[in-house]
Image 1: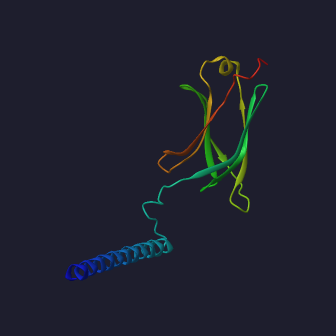
Image 2: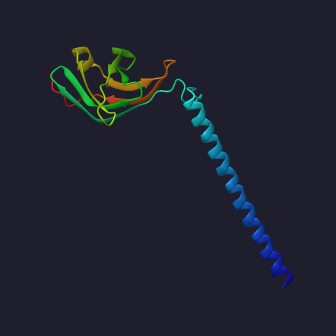
Image 3: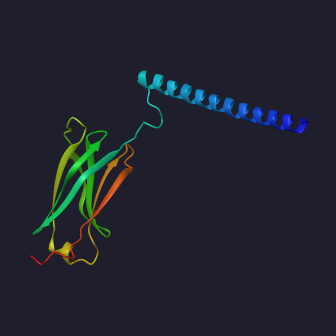
Length: 157
């Protein structure tokens, strides 16, 4: 009987100890989020948000007609701007170009890109790639989205 009571008391102590640690960690998490909110409301930026950038894309479509590649879709960027470049292997066909967005009520902006498809690009063995992305303040590319341009089914026009 003594063993049963001792085992029961140990189990109770273990459960009580675990539940009090959970309360402590959630309380400290709440305190940290309150401190972050206070510093943001004072106009201070945390290290996580300083220099950050982000972009999202949706409904992206690519259409190739004759010698033109048309890419259209919607984007949501923190600073209403994203970038693209057009490359084939190590060759840069279109250097980095900024695209400005006009947001709708939900924060999405539509875009359309028109890129020239030269004979040199068509004849190369390497598939060309369009890269859509955003940049941090230090120039680092983030949220890269690669769009390979499949020219295999394109007839010689």
